[in-house]
Amino acid sequence: MVNGLLTTARTMAGNRPVWDAGEALVAGGMVALCEKLEDEVSLAVIPYEGANLLEVSLYPLDDEWECECGRPGVCEHVIAGLIAFDTGRHTTREALLAAHPPAPEPVVEVEVEIVPPKKKRATPKKRSSAVRTISPSAVDGPSVRKKTSVRSVRERGSAIPRRRRPAGRPVGHVGYRLERSSHGLAVIRMAVFVDEEIQIREPLTGDDAKGVVPVETTTADLMLQEVLGKHQKSGVVSNVEASELLHALGEVSDLTFDGRKITPEDRELSELLAFVEDFGADQVRVQVRPDPPVDAYFMNGFAVRGDVLGRFTNRTNLSGVEIQRLGVGEIIESNALTHFAVDGLPALKKRMTLQVTATRIPEIVLSDVRAVVTVTGAGDTLEAEGLVVYGDPIIATVVRNRLVPTGSQMPLREPDEELTLIRSLRADLGLTPGQKETFTGPKAVAFARRLDAWDEGDIVGDAWEDLV
Image 1 (tube, rainbow, N blue to C red):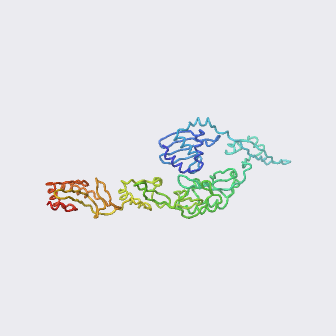
Image 2: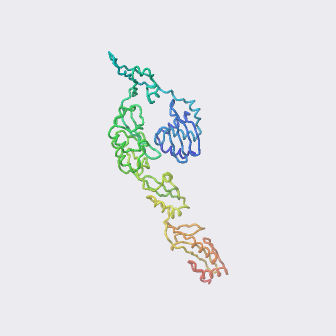
Image 3: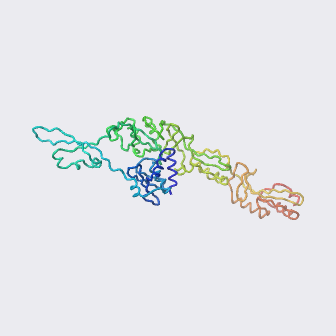
């Protein structure tokens, strides 16, 4: 049911450790099957011990998936779900939670500043501060005052909570990670620290060093954010915006693809072409691939060769499914080459640029069909063979309703004319096309007379004339 999704995920994962991470989750029993429908499979995955469940949805009929982690492309949670469902190595949601319960909600410190009310006093009291310990839900709720009694608020002043930045974390910088996704190359923004990276999901403001995830924002970061525009969440822009994005990426300092530093250049590295070439002993292969070759290419207009990121051009008129199928290659068997030459090849030429190097594809030409009788013999014995052929000289022969070329050219067939000539050979001369017949004595004389009256084709040889 998910074989196609598995293949797609495996291709997108490549040699990255994300596939190994997905297999490790399955081996650790971190996947549960929640629901199985005809067009959707829902699973739950625990990304690590103590973490909450992540919902993973697979759509086999649409060749798509979704993961609650929100990461574009393929993540280890989707891979774990695919492997677990395909191999049956999954448990139930209840059993998963029982075996791997989430860690208790952590307690954070919130500094609460107590501001005394303004009252006329003989001697004003100084402001005091205290540190109160409350749960995160109190911080993220509508107001922290709900955690402070009405009496204390009225008597001692207003409670003003302020969340502390994690102690010891320095201000990081914005890094950009290029990742494969089902819709093309994605640009993922990360807050980069010494010991970890955290995905940036909210828009940058230019004053981000004071945020909960503190990063220094440069002009290049803001310019790139403007280029991404509405695509900030997915990180996938269209091929129309490829040049603009490459220029913006050229201004940032931390840009990687598959874990290595990469340099963006606004130039075409490759284009998608179709190659028609000899394959195997007597076959022809049609394959769509980039020319010149690249390490990776993406249908939203990007290609990678070595440590360079550039543009990729698709000048074909093929759908994504057709590109995927022809990317593997379509084999044309020897008995289908004529049909391919007549119908398949012209249709492909209308949709894409072709590089035809195959020598086994016959050249299609216009040629007349005719009947030929070859006669040999001596005395009162004649040997005759009738054929239906094309061209003069002959370029192809009809043999048992198959057209057999004698060279590199193949005529467009005329089935009705072929049938008329075959009937004439049988009815008028008693010959079956492609089979030799021997006539002796009176039968040879009779055949010679019938041949003399026959005007539906050509006669090769004159041994019969002496018997007329």
